[in-house]
Image (cartoon, rainbow, N blue to C red; front, side, top):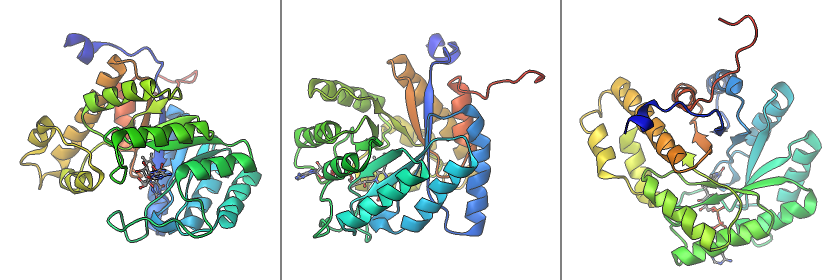
Length: 298
Ligand code: FAD
């Protein structure tokens, strides 16, 4: 409708960005260029992921610490239960607190071998994200975000059990849930209703993945259970060898999804940036999330 396309947004949107810790010098430069580009839109926080199996422990810590020391951004450190004892995880959390990092994204994590392998808690570790949340809250009064799954976590015994689990994480002290990426807006809105009925009162923030590599997303979605609407497959049809056009389409799709969500009352968005600034920056612009002009600016 015309309102969807033309309505200027009220400037009441809040965004946050997810990055992953860089592996090489070149990736590091790329990440920092992206952070510099995105910082002026003033995200509520920026989060840094923790590799599967805890594989990026040092790199995550280094990236979070650098954001904390060198920028005005609020870093949120992802932390998982996988492959470490409670003592080890507690030590990481204490080091974050000492560094002034106050926000943790607390997750169970997946085995290092990938999502297909069965998850086994470390014998002396936190078994589930809800246990980690409770443990972190004992250490210090962290702000804690947790994961939510509009299309149900693949290992959950049922949708209800998965919601009960989200409730446990909130009851343990989480003050926000961030969702797994999804593409069907109705799926997300129905999930919000169910969460509300289950008594989950914290904000559930949609995780927005601007899709530039559609074939990879298709693979990934099979593993995570995220459904891909027919219209989306249609939009990317024939573009496998045309990255330029895919990028424009991706920005359009994600911006439209955000505006539909905004129309349904959603004001907070979490972007999976994949360490790239351009698409996220453009979508923020469309959402009215823009750098503040300072006096003297044209
Ligand atoms: P949990 O909330 O512990 O749930 C895991 C599963 O166990 C669910 O199926 C749940 O229903 C079930 N469950 C929970 N408690 C019990 C119980 N007591 N008994 C039986 N079943 C139970 N992974 C990383 O490795 N690093 C990251 O940085 C990272 N960041 C993420 C960020 C977001 C926003 C999201 C959505 C996911 C992220 N992940 C990350 C992926 C996540 O680690 C996986 O999806 C993992 O499989 C589940 O983590 P969780 O925190 O949701 O686990």
